[in-house]
Length: 415
Image 1: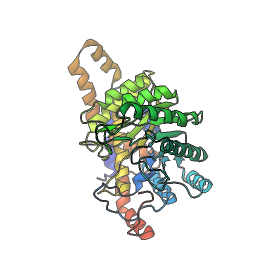
Image 2 (image 1 turned 30 degrees about the vertical axis):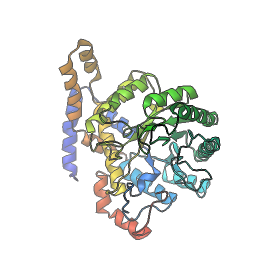
Image 3 (image 1 turned 45 degrees about the vertical axis):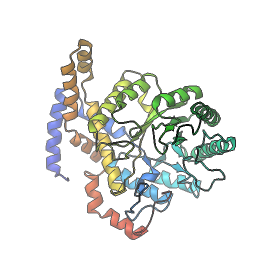
Image 4 (image 1 turned 90 degrees about the vertical axis):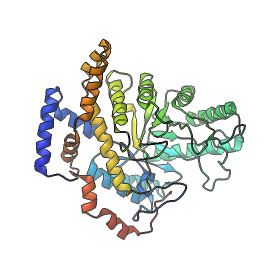
C-alpha cells in the first residue's frame, strides 16, 4: 500500500537507529542494494499459462522491441533491473544491430542467452524423445548447432553466457538407457563448450521431473556439477528455485556450490508443490532469506566472488498482470537480500563455534523480522525510481495504455 513521505521518513529514521545499534551503516547498505541488479526474462512479459489454458492480459508485447520497452519501464520505476535474458527461438531479433541500438538507448543490457531444445518449432528433426541426449546422432547434432547459433547471436548482442536447460528424459521404465543418455548429453555439451567464447560461461540447469516423469537426464545439482567438471572451468551450475523436490534444503545446495566455486547463477521464483513458477517470496520468504544468507557469507568468506554469479527472474503467471508480478518479485528479492545483509555474522559465527543453537537462531530471526522495506524504498528513491512501483502502474493506468496501444487480444511473442 502507498505511504506518505512523512511516514517513510519516520520509518527510515527508526530503522537507521536499529541498524546503527548493530553497527550497520545505512548508506553502505543502500549502496549495496542499489548495485544489486536482477535480469528479466523475455518470456515473463506476457501472460503465462499451463497445459490446460492461457488467459491473455491484453496489451502484451507483440515483439522483442516492445518487450524491451516494458523492461525499460520496469527499470525506470524499480531501479532493480538493467538486463534482459533472451530465449531462442522464441525471441530471435529481426534486426540484431537495431535491437542492440534500441537496448543501449534504453539502458538495457543482454544477460545470459537461453537455448530451447525442449519443443518443436519447425526444425527438421523432432525433440519428442530428447535433444542433446537423443539416441539419433543427427538429432543430437541439430541440438548442438542450435546452441552454437544462440552463442553466435549472443556475441553480437553483447551477452556473456549460455543457459542450457534440457527437458530430456523418459516417462516409462526401459524407454532409454540412463547411462547412454547421460553419455550422449556430455558428448553433445562438450561440442557446445568447445565453441564457448573465452569470456563467457555456460550455465547448466537441472530439474528432477517435468515434462518427463520417470527420469530426467540432469535431475539434480550433483549431476549438473558432474557434467560441468567434465566440460571445464567456464561451465557452472544454475540453480532454479523451483527445480527441486519438496522440502529440499536449497540453501545447503547453494553453500556447497559456492564452497567449490561452481555456482553459475539463479533463476528466482517460488513454489508450493513443485516447479510452480510463482512470484519470488510469495510462498517461502524465509527460505529465500536463508539462501541469501549463504550467498553473502560465502562471498564474504572468499568461497566465490559475488560478481561471478548471475541473477534472473524465471516465473510465469496465469492470473497476474506480468508487469505487476515482476515488480513484486523484484521487491521481494530485494527485501530478502537486504535482510541477509544485516545479519550479525560475527556473533552468528561465535554462537556456531560455541554450540549455542538458540542464540544462533535468534541472530537469523532478528534480521528476518526486521522491516527493511524503508531501506529498499529509500535506495530506489535515491536512484530516481518510484516510491511505490506497483501503485505507479495502477495510478497511471499503464496496462490500459498498453491495451490501447497494442490491442486487447495481443499475445506476447514466443508464447
